[in-house]
Image (cartoon, rainbow, N blue to C red; front, top):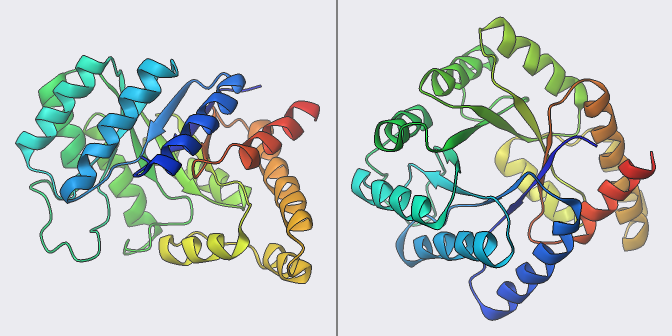
Length: 276
């Protein structure tokens, strides 16, 4: 089995904290290379990410990689976070531009992910392995696919060590994107981001917001199941496990699972891969 990693988001109340604790314990059995924790931008939510990273690293024994975002942070705030993460024991950072939260009227001092990567390198040298984001189906704000690859290359040229993709359900999109990146001189590992399917209505909303395409045949099959939750989950696990197997067979270096702080959808996919 190739290396796997898991993304969590920082919980904000006791119920969410208990759920994350259960999920972390269950997914630890799959021996992830590391886990990442998304960034709480703006106001008091900023503190949740460091708290969660500390818990994942110190209580659960994961190699934890906090997300850092340009949104809402001054250079000094980002420098302080880097010091904190270094003190916790982190050796990875996921550096992202980030999206402006609703109601937040001012961006941070850094505007682009490439600037953030360069800043991290200036502050911390080579202490952190830096992962960045990339988009096999093209970022929804990019002028076109070629421009999107150029933005990706700028992040790598600034010092990124690897990239994690937006999730997708068309393996060909990933392979064509990797080919385009290599043709542009990008040599870092490009790790597929995998979104297990559990709540299809929620997935459709996510996908519309972030520009990820759900193939029509998947949508039509899901809609045919109606309220049959068990069939939706079983079919979704088959689809995602099949996608992962094709990515592995095609040479993907690792798989990064967006867990949404739930263990079962990811575990089901990994179990089917192990059987295959």
